[in-house]
Length: 301
Image (cartoon, rainbow, N blue to C red; front, side, top):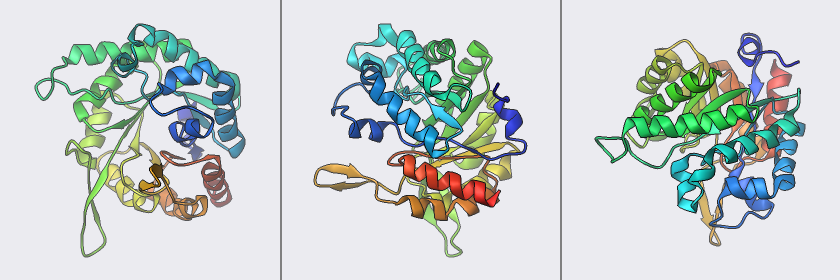
């Protein structure tokens, strides 16, 4: 039987998995397809990705549902299947994780803006996140991870919806960019909506998050320690850090993330010292990146 993951974080650093989207492309998911629907239709290929992360040392496997809200699925005329798609995606991971790894039900941004900036009411966001979280819980998710968010109001609504609907623990992770580097090599971070790390940390905790942190954006693993310290200066919480495999480059018409597993792993010791409790990867990372991270964490533990 799995120990409740928040209990494990008291004494242990956990490893989360890496990219799903870029890995799906390597097993045949065509450009323009709905990744969530394609993964369910090709469950053996999706399972092979989840299994490769498990074998690489991941303690946490994320569902293939980053774009699983009815707002995102609606672009593929699949909004009426939102609950079922999320439930089935979670069941696929549960079949791989069994009692070895935790299953994190993944919720990402809707791509819409809340009033008064946009046209969508807060209640509509809440209902969409509650629907997605309910499907993930029904499929067997151990907890919810809300990631790659840039707007604090959307993040807070998602946290509240997930917590109140499922009763499961919630990880909340926002996406930051480096907007300035000072002479003393300190960094200024902001989300694309202008949210700084301290504002994000306080806002996520106030909404009820159990773990907070950062993923994606253009923050390299080597810059994560500085970002973690800024988050920790605002709140005393468990922290998750999931960096991309470098910054994306367009090579021969394809988006490429060129940072090697060894380069990512080189910065892990500093990430641990800064106070990360969960470390994983985001865009462009592979099972080998996660294997190198896991080895580094376990060797230094």
